[in-house]
Image (tube, rainbow, N blue to C red; front, side, top):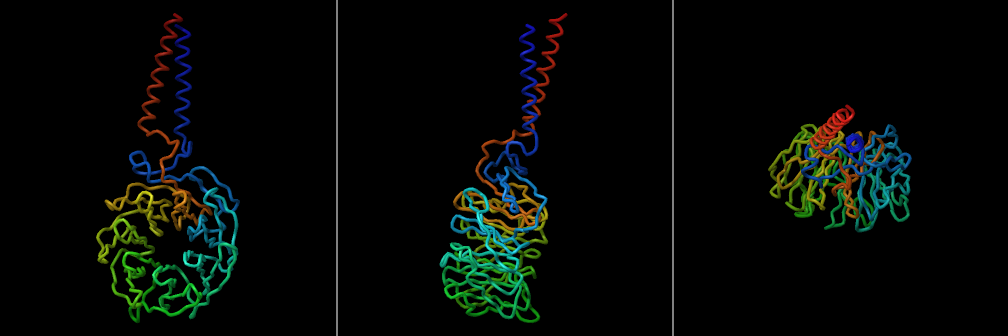
Length: 389
């Protein structure tokens, strides 16, 4: 009897120790996913964190203390992830199979945003300077510098596959929308977005494949719709405060707009009407559609998290904690991961949307197990004392 009780006691202590370890934050690739971490397992979790300055890949969500590179814009192109290191003069090239940096492309002028042109295979890079850099990924070299006049502060870009043109915006009110022929890499004309006193300060641009129009966010809380066949603004849609970025959802044909100052997402239907406003975290900036699960992922920069939206209900179904100062996000069709640039922690959060192989147990189950283990220990001690007496 004594041996049995001792065996029960020993087993209970070991079980209690294992359960306690399971509860340690960060153990077994645990990542903060709220509020539906257990009812909706394919929304995503940070599987890896890539620290850029020393090319270290760590499991789970890790906050780096060194942020010199200041990663900002990010794109996917031909099995590679390209990151604009705004704090330096480089583009980091990541092999998404190994999730390690395999090279750096020098770009003089603090690269900001990136665009891949599938028609010529080149990557276009904006910077605070008035130059637009053209990179050949196969050689890893800058092959063109496109000079724009008057010298603007370049911001976002969009590619139109119907005409092969690249549209470049400047966040300064006095500059137009520049149109570049990617076969010659020259500016062919400009599109005027506004006139005095109705100046336009564009912040982001999106091509809508369903209608062939361009959608341009304006700091005056509107989204402009441009018909590229006439180069005219055909609609002006009122949205939330300070619209920053846009994403297109092919499953419903809607355009999703991040309203940074109102902490909302404006949902625009095919009739250019706002049909929903979704509350998210603080300062929603970048946004992307995930074709593998049909969800919308939103960067909440000041909340250091990614909000996940179900377009079928237009509701936030989860929030994923990432690094500090998340800035941009991209989907990799090869591995199904989301890559998030964390500008203030100099890292890339790699989000997997498949169910984690090892996950923590829900809190109520762990508490129940601890109570059960404690009860077994108490009973075992009582039996031992009775046996000894």
